[in-house]
Image (cartoon, rainbow, N blue to C red; front, side):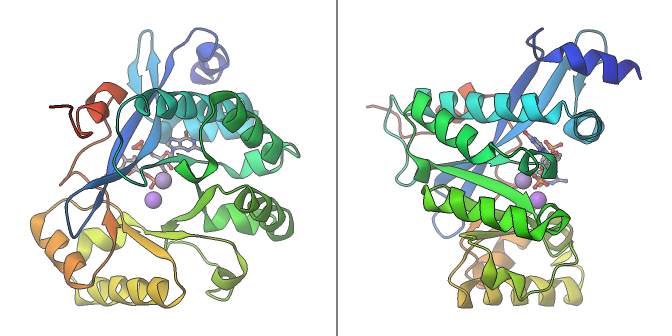
Length: 255
Ligand code: G
Ligand code: G
Ligand code: MN
Ligand code: NA
Protein backbone atom coordinates (compact mmCIF):
# COMPACT_ATOMS: atom_id res chain seq x y z
CA UNK A 1 0.00 0.00 0.00
CA UNK A 2 2.90 2.27 0.81
CA UNK A 3 4.53 1.49 -2.54
CA UNK A 4 1.24 2.14 -4.30
CA UNK A 5 0.84 5.60 -2.75
CA UNK A 6 4.48 6.47 -3.41
CA UNK A 7 4.35 5.26 -7.01
CA UNK A 8 1.48 7.67 -7.61
CA UNK A 9 3.91 10.52 -6.91
CA UNK A 10 7.05 9.02 -8.44
CA UNK A 11 6.58 10.61 -11.86
CA UNK A 12 6.09 14.20 -10.68
CA UNK A 13 8.85 13.78 -8.11
CA UNK A 14 11.12 12.67 -10.95
CA UNK A 15 12.10 9.45 -9.19
CA UNK A 16 11.78 7.26 -12.30
CA UNK A 17 14.71 6.72 -14.61
CA UNK A 18 15.73 4.50 -17.47
CA UNK A 19 18.67 2.15 -17.63
CA UNK A 20 19.72 0.66 -20.93
CA UNK A 21 21.03 -2.82 -21.66
CA UNK A 22 23.28 -3.21 -24.72
CA UNK A 23 22.20 -5.54 -27.51
CA UNK A 24 25.10 -7.17 -29.36
CA UNK A 25 25.57 -8.76 -32.79
CA UNK A 26 26.88 -12.19 -31.83
CA UNK A 27 29.09 -12.73 -34.89
CA UNK A 28 30.99 -9.45 -34.58
CA UNK A 29 30.48 -8.31 -30.99
CA UNK A 30 29.18 -4.96 -32.32
CA UNK A 31 26.62 -2.93 -30.40
CA UNK A 32 23.38 -2.93 -32.42
CA UNK A 33 20.88 -1.54 -29.96
CA UNK A 34 19.76 -1.19 -26.37
CA UNK A 35 16.71 -2.09 -24.30
CA UNK A 36 15.26 0.60 -22.03
CA UNK A 37 14.56 -0.79 -18.54
CA UNK A 38 12.68 1.21 -15.97
CA UNK A 39 14.08 1.93 -12.50
CA UNK A 40 12.56 3.72 -9.52
CA UNK A 41 14.88 5.64 -7.25
CA UNK A 42 12.74 5.60 -4.11
CA UNK A 43 13.63 8.31 -1.54
CA UNK A 44 14.01 5.85 1.35
CA UNK A 45 13.95 2.33 -0.16
CA UNK A 46 16.66 3.02 -2.73
CA UNK A 47 16.57 1.50 -6.21
CA UNK A 48 13.34 -0.46 -6.73
CA UNK A 49 13.27 -2.94 -9.63
CA UNK A 50 10.40 -3.23 -12.12
CA UNK A 51 9.41 -6.72 -10.92
CA UNK A 52 8.29 -5.02 -7.69
CA UNK A 53 6.45 -2.01 -9.06
CA UNK A 54 5.34 -2.77 -12.66
CA UNK A 55 2.58 -5.09 -11.34
CA UNK A 56 1.37 -2.27 -9.05
CA UNK A 57 1.56 0.20 -11.93
CA UNK A 58 -0.53 -2.18 -14.04
CA UNK A 59 -3.18 -2.77 -11.36
CA UNK A 60 -3.58 0.91 -10.56
CA UNK A 61 -3.46 2.13 -14.16
CA UNK A 62 -0.37 4.20 -13.39
CA UNK A 63 1.33 2.22 -16.16
CA UNK A 64 -0.42 4.52 -18.66
CA UNK A 65 1.29 7.79 -17.67
CA UNK A 66 4.45 5.87 -16.72
CA UNK A 67 4.50 3.99 -20.04
CA UNK A 68 4.11 7.24 -21.94
CA UNK A 69 6.93 8.77 -19.90
CA UNK A 70 9.14 5.76 -20.74
CA UNK A 71 8.45 6.12 -24.48
CA UNK A 72 9.11 9.87 -24.45
CA UNK A 73 12.23 9.60 -22.29
CA UNK A 74 13.65 6.77 -24.40
CA UNK A 75 13.03 8.66 -27.66
CA UNK A 76 14.53 11.86 -26.23
CA UNK A 77 17.57 9.85 -25.16
CA UNK A 78 17.88 8.31 -28.61
CA UNK A 79 17.69 11.78 -30.17
CA UNK A 80 20.47 12.94 -27.86
CA UNK A 81 22.64 9.90 -28.66
CA UNK A 82 22.08 10.62 -32.36
CA UNK A 83 24.07 13.86 -32.06
CA UNK A 84 27.13 11.59 -32.41
CA UNK A 85 27.68 8.80 -34.94
CA UNK A 86 25.72 5.73 -33.83
CA UNK A 87 26.36 2.17 -34.95
CA UNK A 88 24.58 1.47 -38.26
CA UNK A 89 20.93 0.45 -37.73
CA UNK A 90 21.04 1.10 -33.97
CA UNK A 91 17.64 0.38 -32.37
CA UNK A 92 16.23 1.37 -29.02
CA UNK A 93 13.73 -1.12 -27.53
CA UNK A 94 10.92 -0.22 -25.16
CA UNK A 95 8.74 -2.72 -23.26
CA UNK A 96 4.97 -2.27 -23.38
CA UNK A 97 2.32 -3.63 -20.98
CA UNK A 98 -1.04 -5.13 -21.95
CA UNK A 99 -2.75 -2.27 -20.21
CA UNK A 100 -1.23 0.19 -22.68
CA UNK A 101 -3.01 -1.59 -25.53
CA UNK A 102 -6.33 -0.93 -23.80
CA UNK A 103 -5.61 2.75 -24.36
CA UNK A 104 -7.36 3.47 -27.68
CA UNK A 105 -4.87 6.20 -28.59
CA UNK A 106 -1.64 4.19 -28.06
CA UNK A 107 -0.82 4.35 -31.77
CA UNK A 108 -1.33 8.15 -31.82
CA UNK A 109 0.75 8.56 -28.65
CA UNK A 110 3.67 6.69 -30.26
CA UNK A 111 3.28 8.71 -33.47
CA UNK A 112 3.18 11.96 -31.49
CA UNK A 113 6.31 11.11 -29.49
CA UNK A 114 8.22 10.14 -32.64
CA UNK A 115 7.16 13.44 -34.23
CA UNK A 116 8.06 15.63 -31.25
CA UNK A 117 11.46 13.98 -30.72
CA UNK A 118 12.19 13.71 -34.46
CA UNK A 119 13.24 10.09 -34.04
CA UNK A 120 12.80 7.81 -37.06
CA UNK A 121 10.19 5.10 -36.49
CA UNK A 122 12.62 2.41 -37.66
CA UNK A 123 15.01 3.25 -34.79
CA UNK A 124 12.33 2.40 -32.23
CA UNK A 125 11.46 -1.19 -31.36
CA UNK A 126 8.49 -2.07 -29.18
CA UNK A 127 8.64 -5.29 -27.14
CA UNK A 128 5.46 -7.15 -26.28
CA UNK A 129 4.89 -10.57 -24.74
CA UNK A 130 2.67 -13.40 -25.91
CA UNK A 131 0.39 -13.03 -22.89
CA UNK A 132 -0.09 -9.36 -23.75
CA UNK A 133 -1.35 -10.30 -27.21
CA UNK A 134 -3.55 -13.07 -25.85
CA UNK A 135 -5.30 -10.61 -23.51
CA UNK A 136 -7.17 -9.31 -26.56
CA UNK A 137 -5.92 -10.82 -29.81
CA UNK A 138 -8.12 -8.77 -32.11
CA UNK A 139 -7.38 -5.33 -30.65
CA UNK A 140 -3.65 -5.90 -30.10
CA UNK A 141 -3.17 -7.34 -33.60
CA UNK A 142 -4.86 -4.31 -35.10
CA UNK A 143 -2.75 -1.89 -33.06
CA UNK A 144 0.47 -3.77 -33.73
CA UNK A 145 -0.30 -3.65 -37.45
CA UNK A 146 -0.82 0.10 -37.30
CA UNK A 147 2.43 0.59 -35.41
CA UNK A 148 4.19 -1.60 -37.93
CA UNK A 149 2.74 0.43 -40.81
CA UNK A 150 4.29 3.52 -39.22
CA UNK A 151 7.64 1.78 -39.53
CA UNK A 152 8.14 0.93 -35.85
CA UNK A 153 9.95 -2.39 -35.30
CA UNK A 154 8.15 -5.03 -33.22
CA UNK A 155 9.71 -7.74 -31.06
CA UNK A 156 8.04 -10.67 -29.35
CA UNK A 157 9.62 -10.75 -25.87
CA UNK A 158 10.10 -13.71 -23.49
CA UNK A 159 9.47 -16.07 -26.40
CA UNK A 160 8.85 -19.67 -25.38
CA UNK A 161 7.26 -18.93 -22.01
CA UNK A 162 3.73 -18.19 -23.25
CA UNK A 163 0.92 -20.41 -24.36
CA UNK A 164 0.20 -19.02 -27.79
CA UNK A 165 -0.06 -21.17 -30.85
CA UNK A 166 2.95 -20.99 -33.14
CA UNK A 167 0.43 -20.29 -35.89
CA UNK A 168 -0.07 -16.81 -34.47
CA UNK A 169 3.52 -15.96 -35.26
CA UNK A 170 2.66 -15.74 -38.93
CA UNK A 171 -0.33 -13.47 -38.32
CA UNK A 172 1.40 -10.91 -36.17
CA UNK A 173 3.66 -8.33 -37.79
CA UNK A 174 6.79 -9.13 -35.74
CA UNK A 175 10.27 -8.38 -36.96
CA UNK A 176 12.15 -10.12 -34.17
CA UNK A 177 11.83 -12.90 -31.59
CA UNK A 178 13.57 -12.60 -28.24
CA UNK A 179 14.28 -16.03 -26.73
CA UNK A 180 13.51 -16.01 -23.02
CA UNK A 181 16.56 -16.17 -20.78
CA UNK A 182 15.26 -19.25 -18.93
CA UNK A 183 16.13 -21.33 -22.02
CA UNK A 184 19.41 -19.58 -22.70
CA UNK A 185 20.55 -20.09 -19.12
CA UNK A 186 20.33 -23.88 -19.47
CA UNK A 187 21.72 -24.47 -22.98
CA UNK A 188 25.05 -25.82 -21.80
CA UNK A 189 23.55 -27.87 -18.96
CA UNK A 190 20.49 -29.36 -20.56
CA UNK A 191 20.22 -30.98 -23.98
CA UNK A 192 16.48 -30.24 -23.90
CA UNK A 193 17.08 -26.52 -23.43
CA UNK A 194 19.71 -26.63 -26.19
CA UNK A 195 17.22 -28.35 -28.51
CA UNK A 196 14.48 -25.81 -27.72
CA UNK A 197 16.79 -22.88 -28.42
CA UNK A 198 17.99 -24.49 -31.64
CA UNK A 199 14.38 -25.02 -32.75
CA UNK A 200 13.41 -21.41 -31.96
CA UNK A 201 16.38 -20.05 -33.92
CA UNK A 202 15.49 -22.27 -36.89
CA UNK A 203 11.83 -21.26 -36.68
CA UNK A 204 12.64 -17.55 -36.54
CA UNK A 205 14.98 -17.80 -39.50
CA UNK A 206 12.53 -19.77 -41.60
CA UNK A 207 9.86 -17.14 -40.91
CA UNK A 208 12.29 -14.37 -41.86
CA UNK A 209 12.40 -12.98 -38.32
CA UNK A 210 15.40 -11.57 -36.50
CA UNK A 211 16.41 -13.49 -33.38
CA UNK A 212 17.81 -12.23 -30.08
CA UNK A 213 18.96 -14.49 -27.24
CA UNK A 214 18.36 -12.93 -23.82
CA UNK A 215 20.28 -13.53 -20.64
CA UNK A 216 23.63 -14.69 -22.09
CA UNK A 217 25.85 -14.94 -19.02
CA UNK A 218 28.76 -17.16 -20.07
CA UNK A 219 31.17 -17.62 -22.94
CA UNK A 220 30.00 -21.20 -23.49
CA UNK A 221 26.38 -20.05 -23.85
CA UNK A 222 27.61 -17.48 -26.36
CA UNK A 223 29.60 -20.10 -28.28
CA UNK A 224 26.56 -22.36 -28.54
CA UNK A 225 24.36 -19.50 -29.81
CA UNK A 226 27.02 -18.47 -32.32
CA UNK A 227 27.10 -22.06 -33.60
CA UNK A 228 23.35 -21.76 -34.31
CA UNK A 229 23.97 -18.45 -36.10
CA UNK A 230 21.67 -16.68 -33.69
CA UNK A 231 21.84 -13.02 -34.82
CA UNK A 232 21.95 -11.02 -31.62
CA UNK A 233 22.07 -11.27 -27.84
CA UNK A 234 21.83 -9.49 -24.53
CA UNK A 235 23.04 -10.51 -21.13
CA UNK A 236 25.46 -10.03 -18.28
CA UNK A 237 28.24 -11.65 -20.33
CA UNK A 238 28.21 -8.45 -22.44
CA UNK A 239 26.75 -5.87 -20.08
CA UNK A 240 24.19 -5.24 -17.38
CA UNK A 241 21.55 -2.54 -17.77
CA UNK A 242 23.42 0.75 -17.28
CA UNK A 243 22.83 4.51 -17.30
CA UNK A 244 22.57 6.33 -20.63
CA UNK A 245 26.01 7.93 -20.24
CA UNK A 246 27.64 4.49 -20.07
CA UNK A 247 25.93 3.46 -23.31
CA UNK A 248 27.26 6.58 -25.07
CA UNK A 249 30.83 5.45 -24.24
CA UNK A 250 30.20 2.30 -26.28
CA UNK A 251 29.50 4.24 -29.49
CA UNK A 252 32.27 4.76 -32.05
CA UNK A 253 34.42 7.48 -30.43
CA UNK A 254 35.67 10.43 -32.50
CA UNK A 255 39.45 10.16 -32.98
O1 G B 1 14.94 -4.43 -15.55
P1 G B 1 14.65 -5.86 -15.17
O2 G B 1 15.81 -5.92 -15.19
O3 G B 1 14.46 -6.04 -13.69
O4 G B 1 13.16 -5.92 -15.76
C1 G B 1 12.23 -6.81 -15.25
C2 G B 1 10.97 -6.82 -16.04
O5 G B 1 10.32 -5.55 -16.05
C3 G B 1 11.16 -7.22 -17.50
O6 G B 1 10.23 -8.25 -17.77
C4 G B 1 10.82 -6.01 -18.28
O7 G B 1 10.13 -6.37 -19.46
C5 G B 1 9.90 -5.22 -17.35
N1 G B 1 10.10 -3.80 -17.62
C6 G B 1 11.23 -3.09 -17.48
N2 G B 1 11.05 -1.81 -17.89
C7 G B 1 9.75 -1.73 -18.30
C8 G B 1 8.97 -0.67 -18.85
O8 G B 1 9.41 0.44 -19.10
N3 G B 1 7.66 -0.96 -19.14
C9 G B 1 7.12 -2.19 -18.93
N4 G B 1 5.85 -2.37 -19.23
N5 G B 1 7.85 -3.21 -18.43
C10 G B 1 9.15 -2.98 -18.12
O1 G C 1 11.39 -9.58 -19.76
P1 G C 1 12.47 -8.72 -20.25
O2 G C 1 13.22 -9.37 -21.33
O3 G C 1 12.08 -7.35 -20.70
O4 G C 1 13.48 -8.59 -19.05
C1 G C 1 14.72 -8.07 -19.08
C2 G C 1 15.23 -8.41 -17.72
O5 G C 1 16.29 -9.36 -17.78
C3 G C 1 15.75 -7.25 -16.95
O6 G C 1 15.33 -7.43 -15.63
C4 G C 1 17.27 -7.45 -17.03
O7 G C 1 17.92 -6.83 -15.94
C5 G C 1 17.36 -8.95 -16.96
N1 G C 1 18.60 -9.50 -17.51
C6 G C 1 19.27 -9.05 -18.59
N2 G C 1 20.37 -9.82 -18.84
C7 G C 1 20.39 -10.78 -17.89
C8 G C 1 21.27 -11.86 -17.61
O8 G C 1 22.25 -12.13 -18.29
N3 G C 1 20.96 -12.64 -16.55
C9 G C 1 19.86 -12.41 -15.76
N4 G C 1 19.66 -13.23 -14.73
N5 G C 1 19.01 -11.39 -15.99
C10 G C 1 19.26 -10.58 -17.05
MN1 MN D 1 12.13 -6.99 -22.73
NA1 NA E 1 12.49 -11.26 -22.12
